[in-house]
Image (cartoon, rainbow, N blue to C red; front, side, top):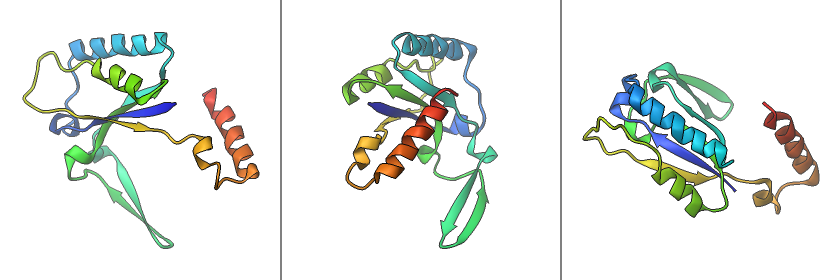
Length: 143
């Protein structure tokens, strides 16, 4: 089963402060462990919300709202997609994520969310939609 591991933004990440070389090196080693274990499907850090945008849907209207966005603690600074056997295994991997060795007084929080699988929609998804979804997954999995 797949899980998205969500790194919450901080004042530093929203200010565009880059991680130290020491932390980047530790993250690289951690990512290497994930890849060797065959559990990492994807993962990246995200630029500050000041470089992003939101698109609001309201009926037929679409409104683009440029960042930055308030409520830093609700924003995402990075993520991993892990393919593991259970939520407990995902939690164990998350506990091993390196933190900034220089240390900060800031409290960091990482969220773990299970990704929907096609089987979760078995009661509502038509066979045609299931087939289309499987074709798209096959086409995008090689990217």
